[in-house]
Length: 471
Figure 1 (cartoon, one colour):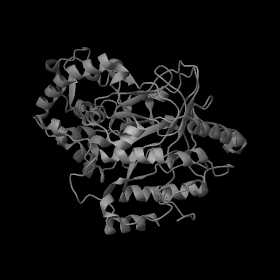
Figure 2: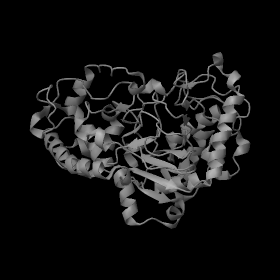
Figure 3: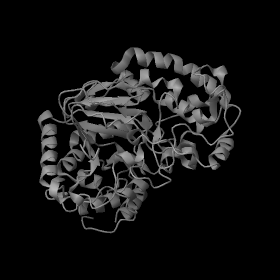
Figure 4: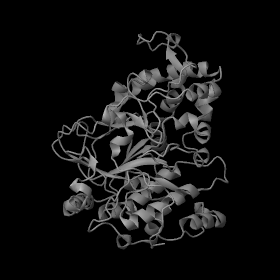
């Protein structure tokens, strides 16, 4: 599997991270087609009025709690404690907030070495990029680099500290159908870019958003099942289980082949720090109320204020909206974005909290449904640098993506979900198979076949199907 092949996916257009975020381009959300009015009516049931009332009532104390605790609400655990086993209270906090910081999984000097290696790699290849313009955002002073295949990223993706952390995070999920074709004990690699954000930057203003689709949340039949309890009406929204993997396996998060849109099932998004970075230093912000925020986001398109000029958040001042195609913060081919106007009850100015200070080698993860953002300005003194590395389980679809990702890796091309072009194909010193020293690491990259292991969710039939799509 270490030979080059032909990708089954059409390469996406060249570009940058800005292509999927209106908050980076100051675009207006596009007006959705009339079919979205019909979609609302198809999904609607009268019980959703009661759901809306209950969700709004539940948001009031939740908003107050987050606003009062601030960054302290984000759970932090050590890598050693994670390996030894966390308490039920710790697990509850992680699952409720949908976020966690894991400290100490990678030695500080090793993480700093990765950053220096990336800087050297970029400098060595500055004259080998198309048009002599290094790809990234913003183009005049890059903070987010379109680099996917460096040696440092290869080493980080296969580092035991990251792999073991990902196994723990995937263990928090479960399958409501025991026959679901997934191994939550087997993380696989999903290539993403990196950030080296310099002090003073105010252009990488990534606003509050949720990845994994926009209008797809309501339009895709699979995602309708994921959020099915929220849409059933009454108090059923409380039964929503964000950690049930079964309905996620067949869901389609990228119906429009959008550049930068994640097309696989990615249980946890995450990054590994390569700097000492704290609040106000260009770091991550999260909305730490996983299930409740999801319920609000899913119900929001079905309601509007009685008076469009009013800023009242009272239940009595909102009514069903079934005659317009409006899905606030949603656009075709973009991510799901949120702000104080589109989702006012979340009071994002108070509830989007910056994560506490992290050191080089610390890992930060957030559930795939968590609302997150990046601080609008870096007011610190040193760079804010991360490698984006998520926790992704093995499924048939994920293995199919991994096959094409492997092909692109061997050719030095961008990962299939990301802006295309020649990427690093002409670069010297990029990552290679030689950097992957373990059998587990090679399997994570799709470079070796998987072996049956029923105890780890790898039945003979499932393993054979995975291996067949990897060829």
